[in-house]
Image (cartoon, rainbow, N blue to C red; front, side, top):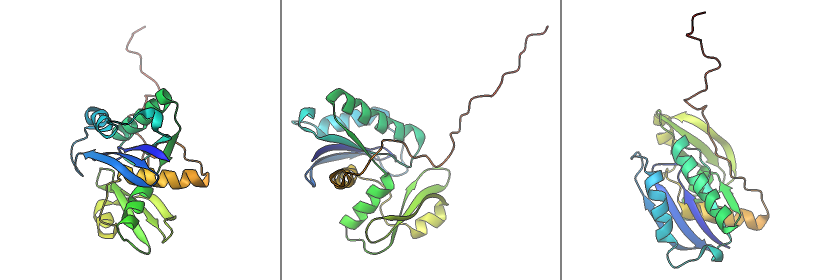
Length: 200
């Protein structure tokens, strides 16, 4: 399979092109804890990664579904679905924590591992995985100081790992819905009623 993959669940925007399990090209922008630049930087990164490649060559788009802050996550999901619609391609949604766990395995992590994403407000979204990369707990919100003491080193999902997880699951015939994973209720809410200021 030949996939374009993106992840915008953290301040690090990650884009990759992966063919048959091999990373053809990848690019990223930002740093953990940095400013959110998803709206400005995602399209240029995709353009750079796709240089010389037609969307008609792709078998699909893979996208990290979070957990993560609302705005950045939505930018990636909407972009993936827009490209897929325009190019008539399927979209594969991958839990961004699953992608981090896969990346840790690629870099030699063994046994039970805990991975997390900084979701602001001094909290991390954390999941624990067994030696077969199956989630055995989470995702759940954990205080940042507790999470930093227990999670694996890398808290940034890489688009290459999003693609690699998506390919394995697609070959197994697994469903990969593109639905954002939020662990909190939104800050903004619609008022239930408005008081009238008109005097009768």
